Length: 132
Image (cartoon, rainbow, N blue to C red; front, side):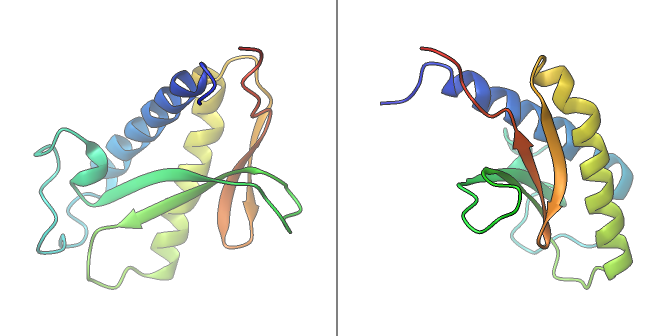
């Protein structure tokens, strides 16, 4: 059984990443050719499924991490072309900066941070859902 606030949390997280996806597409879309099987931006109902970017998170309990539990941020570019490391770093830094800006808007009153955890960024801090 899911906590009643789980859907609310997931919807807010999806909204954050859809907004970030749109900004990335505006800035970098067309910089690299899409994979053959990847639809053009805006041709599906879900921004995760089309265009150059699929950005999102997955939860990790944080065993062995100095930051503990949180959401690892994944930035996937749907291209077979080589993306220069400096461009990938630039894109990931932009995603981090946008998260720092948007998280307080979508998750008001929570103390959430975005920090490097190994090779990825992690959203961590006040992840609790409160009382049911």
